[in-house]
Length: 51
Image (tube, rainbow, N blue to C red; front, side):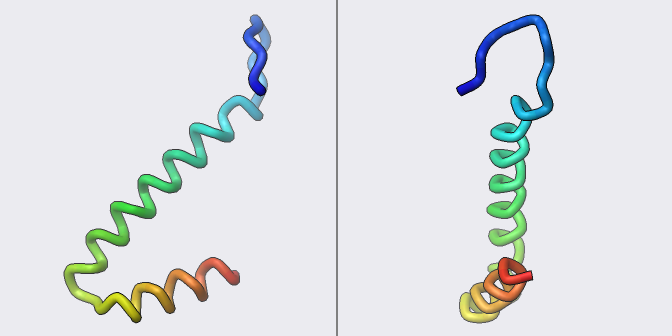
């Protein structure tokens, strides 16, 4: 839970960073699906997640 207050904490930015990362991932996947098969995209994202 993020508490309101005058001080700024970097942890307050983590949900925003997570949302931005997820939306960027969806954009990249949509662009990649135009030229690559679904199996290739799934295997690539699984390997990337393991790293």
